[in-house]
Structures are given as structure tokens and as C-alpha cells.
Image (tube, rainbow, N blue to C red; front, side):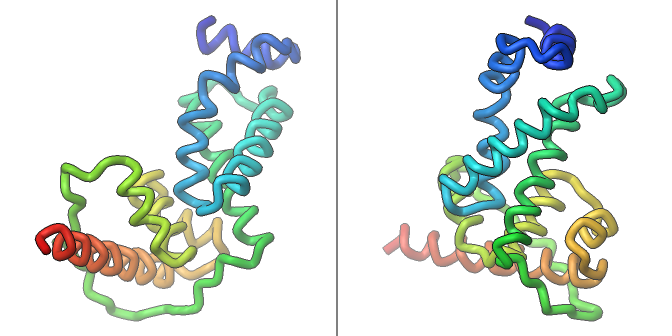
Length: 178
């Protein structure tokens, strides 16, 4: 089934098309949910709730732009809502004139699970902003609007997330050398 056929089938509430859509995209979007939410069960809940919204709002997809990107935005928003509801997203540090660190890089030999493990060691606020900016490609203005924070808070949290990741990578490298 093509993507267009899936969309049309889901608009008609065809169960086979809905199942195919879920089967095709759930592994990728579960990864998105896990980057935001540490707990597997809660990430699965966000995934299911996100797909429910995709299915119930699919008529709102205009056909313009990337369908997968439209679904991704729904999944990310679902994760952010879950974090807000659980009161785990607290960002109260705002730094002015913080220098951005440009030396950050992830070693090429890191596996996806290693990266997820590193991200899971970040505080929720750092991890959320890092995911939104670096991985999802949101701009600081969009992050600030989505999370109800200032642009400077978004920028400073990203800088602190990168700093923390670099420290974690350096610790990992030291441990591997020992």
C-alpha cells in the first residue's frame, strides 16, 4: 500500500489501513517517544495516544508537506504533554550570555542504544530541549512557545545539555581506557 492509499484508507476508517499505518511507523515513532520519555511503558502510552490522535485527526492532514513529519509533530507534542502532566518538565535556569560550546560531538562508534542511554542520563528539561533542537530540528522560538519558556532558557538548557553530554562521553572514554 502506498502512503496515499494508507492516508485515504485511514480517512475512511479502514481497519486494515490503520493497522498497516501503525505497523509501518510505530517502530520509528516509538524511538522518538523513548528519546523524550525514559520509561518504556510511558513511552508506549505516548505512542498509542499519539497514533490515536493521528487516526482521529487524519482528515486535518492537508496533503501538503511530509506526512511522516506531520505524524512526528503529533508524537512529539504527545510526549511533551505527558511530561507536563507528570510535572517532570521543570526548567527554571535562565542564563544570559552563556557561551555556546562548539566542540560537542558524538563518537561515530556509538550505537543507537548507547546514545539513548546517554540521553536518558540527562535531566528531563535538558533531554527535551536537546531532542527538540538537535534531533527534531525545532528552532528556539518554537521550543520556547511549545514549552512555555523563554528563548534564552531554551538556549541555555541546550548549552547545558551539550556540556553534560560531553562530560558523560569523557567519563565513558576514561572508563573504556581503564
